[in-house]
Image (tube, rainbow, N blue to C red; front, side, top):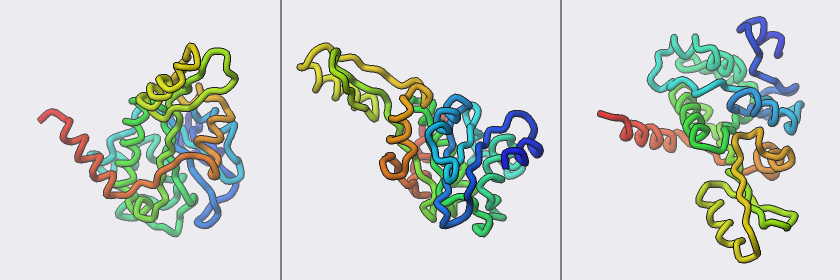
Length: 224
């Protein structure tokens, strides 16, 4: 499959496909930011059932783009072909190649923005995936807090969570906080357990109503 994508689109292949596909197969597609994130996820995922597609930079705002622009976009065209259904108005669920699409962006402000833009794409052009519960957002840890001299650390899921953990642990000694600068900065075992392994990762299904609310919030922040 990777060879087919290389021949069709040229340049470096950003899709590392899995071996099994189709509804009911358990196959999953992870969308991540950039090659280093893709390499880190690829090292801990199940090559039989889990594919990884590396996006480059901020995704196109597909909610404001024409169909021709979406179809011609180098990254979105690969994503659409990987999923296999086409986009509205020619969406065909019979071609679906993955049970789930997992949006796994870096744990920072840029990652949050990229994740919202990807959700806007699905909302506008593949809403059937949202309505079927096939799109999930993975919540990677934001960083970790440790007490100097102690062998274990605790993971924080946001900046406020890290601060709360630091305040709680400070009574035991000097506290060290480390923020993860992208998925590649997360230890492999932690990345596998918190983001990749289905039994232990933290994900949220996203509905079309939730994405509609995100779009309204972004529109309200834009200058009039």
